[in-house]
Figure 1 (tube, rainbow, N blue to C red):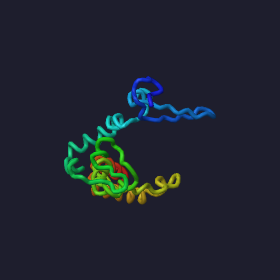
Figure 2 (tube, rainbow, N blue to C red; figure 1 turned 45 degrees about the vertical axis):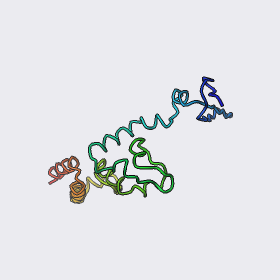
Figure 3 (spheres, rainbow, N blue to C red; figure 1 turned 60 degrees about the vertical axis):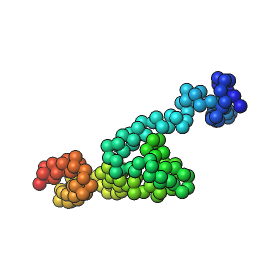
Figure 4 (cartoon, rainbow, N blue to C red; figure 1 turned 90 degrees about the vertical axis):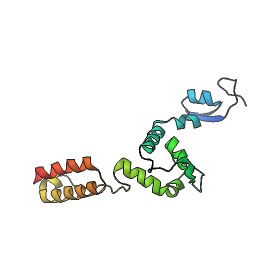
Length: 164
């Protein structure tokens, strides 16, 4: 089948658009799909997130193994190399398959590999109990130092000094 747009190359992408109450399906070649802003295999590899993760891997070779490592997700067959290049995992099971490598990456990017959330604070709670606020800040400081997030630790240290 030829591309509906250029009528020159073979269509490899089916783009379905819903406009008002009608559904229109376009059969596009890869070049025309890219021109319309559809992410193809080529554009995913050139995404900013893929470039960022690749750059992070170059700075710290231990963060993600080399492409020769051969780790694959059992569910979708995706590899760490695919993740490094595209910045996306193939499926939900990839998180489990690459858990140790993703944990290292998250720790490096965010200072922690676990989301602990934030405690709900009622309006005016910090203002009414400076001792509680001081204890909370000290606990946050301890976690920041433990996770080697030194910028946050310095900010928390300064806030503690003001309260003391």
